[in-house]
Amino acid sequence: MRLPLLQGVLPVDRAGLTRDVLAGLTLAALAIPGTMGYTKIIGTPVITGLYTILIPMALFALFGSSRHLSVGADSATAAVVAAGLAGMAVRGSNEWLALCSLLALMAGVLMFAARVLRLGFLADFLSRTVLVGFLTGVGVQVALLEVSGMLGLQRTSNDPLLEIVRDLRLIGESNAYAVCVSLAVLAVILGCRRISDRVPGGLIAVVTAIGISWALGLDAHLETLGAVPSGLPTLGLPHVEWNWPLLQKLLPIAFACFVVILAQSAATSRAYAAKYNDPFDANVDMVGLGMANLGAGLSGTFIVNGSPTNTAMVDGGGGRSQVAQLTTCVLVLLVLLFLTGPLAHLPTAVLSAIVFLVAARMIDIKGMRRIYAVARAEFWVALLTAATVVVVGVEQGILLAMVLSLIDHVRRGYRGTNLVIVADKKKRGWQTVPLDEPQAISPGLLVYLFSHSLYYANAGQFAEEILRLARNGTQPPLRWLCVEAAAIGDVDFSAAAMLRDTAALLQQQGIRLLFANVSAPVRSQFDCYGVTEAIGADAICGSIHAVVVACEQAAGVPAEAPEVQAGQAGQAGDDAAKA
Image (tube, rainbow, N blue to C red; front, side, top):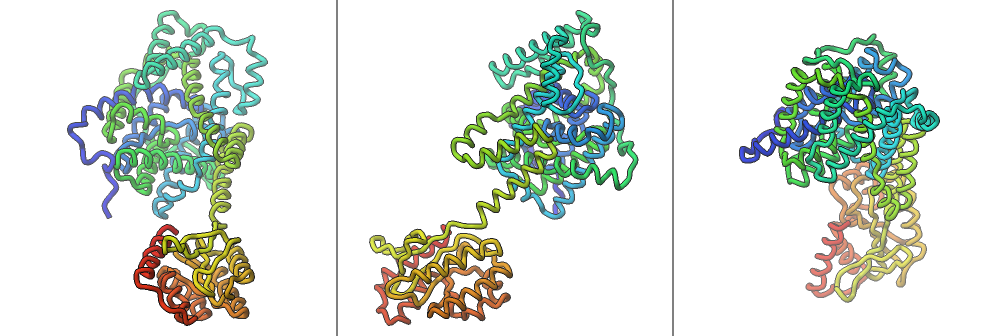
C-alpha cells in the first residue's frame, strides 16, 4: 500500500507556484493574529498559538490528501477543550497547558484508530442542520466570554451567561483604554473586510496596536501580553501524572474534539475537492489530522483542526495546493525566531476583539433562517443544539448534536415511502401510485415497491403494508403479490423471519409472494435465512417484466406484442435503476 505522503503537494504546478506562495503570505498575515486570539479561548500562552501553525500545519501538508485544507487552531475545538478542562487545573497554568497537549495526543490517537477501522464515514452522520446549530452555539458562547476582555474586566468564570450578567453589572468599572482599543480594532478589521477579504485587517490592527502601545506607554494603563518567549517549541511528552483515571477523565473531551475535527475537516475538504475536481480521501486525511495533533501534543500546544476560515483565506488568495500552507509555516518560523519581542506591548483587549469577531462570524443567522424557512422541524433541532452549547456546555452540545443527527437519520431512513407499480397504458410502460390506490399491473398480480433495506425496525411496516394490500385486493382477485426489491440492499435475521411468516399468511389466502430485481447479496441472504426455501426458488425473478410474463402465462393470458414487451422491459430497468 502506498504511503499517504505529499498527496496535497504533488504534482507541483510550476505555473501556479508563485500564486501558492503569495497565498501562503496572505494566510500568515491573517492567521497569526487569529491563532494568538484562539489562545484566549483555550487559556494557554500566546506563543502556543504560533506553535499550532509551525509543526501541525506542516505535518498535515505532508501526510494529508487534501490540496486545500488548512489545519491549525480552531475556535470550536478550543471551546470544547476550555469547557472540558474547567475545574481540572488552573486556567493558564503549566498543568493546564500540559493537559491541553495531552488532549491533542489523545485526539491524534483516535484519528489513527479511526483510520485503521476506516471510520471516515462517521463524518457523514453529523448532519448539516445540527452542525449549523452547534457552531452557532459555540459562536455565541465564545463571543459572550470575550466581552469582559474588551471592557478591560477580569473574567471570573467560563459560564457565558453568568459572565455577561456580571459584565453588565460592572460596566461602570470598565477600563476606558481597553474599550477604546477594542472599538478601534473592530473598526479596522471590519473596515478592511468591507474593502476586501484579502486585506489583512487583523494583522494591521495588531501591528498598529503594538506601535501605539509602545509609543504611548499603554502598558501602564491596561493589560498587555508581557514578555513572549522566542525560539522553537521544546519537543517531548506533556508533563502530567500519567495514569488511567486521568485518561478516563480526558477521553470524553478528546472524543468530542475528534467528532468536531472529523466532521468539520471532512466537510471542508470535500467541498474544495469538488470545487476544483481534485482527489480527496477522508481516511488519508485522518492520517494527516492524526499526525498534526501528535505534532501539536509533542510540541507543547493544543488540539488543531481543519479550519474552514483559513482554507477560504488560502483559496481567496489563489492557493491551490499545500505549498501555500508550507509557506505559512516558514513565515511563522521566522516570527518565532526574530519577531516575538514586540508582542510584549500588545494589549490583551486586541486579542479579545479579534476573537469576538471570529466568534460573531460563526453565528450563522442566515443559515438558521434558511433552515427555519424550509425545514421547520430541523430548525428546532439546530436551535436546541445551539442552546445546549450556550447554557450547558460545548462538550454536551457536541454529544447532543451526534445523538440528534443519528435520531434524525433513523427517523428518515427506517420507514421508507413505499408505492405500488401499475401499468401506464398511454406510455406502454409502468408508473407508481400510492399504497391506498392499489391497481393490478396484470390480472391477479400486484407489484409492491419497497424503498429501503429490510431490518428489524421496518419489518413490521413491510408486513403491515403487504397484508393490507392483500386484504384490500383487486379485481380479479389477487393470485400473486410481487415485491420490487431493487432498493433492498440488506436483510437481517428478524426481517427474514418476517418474510417467511408473511409468505405463509399470504399462502393461506391463496396468494403467492414473489420477488423481482433481487441483488446477488440479498439472494444469498435469502438462501441463508431460509426465505428461498419458504417461497420457492422460482418465486425470485430477474425483473418485473419476467414476473408479468410468467403470471400471464400461468393465468392463460395471450402474450403481448413483442414491441410492447420490449418497452415494458426497458421501463422496468429504468424503474429499478431509479429505485
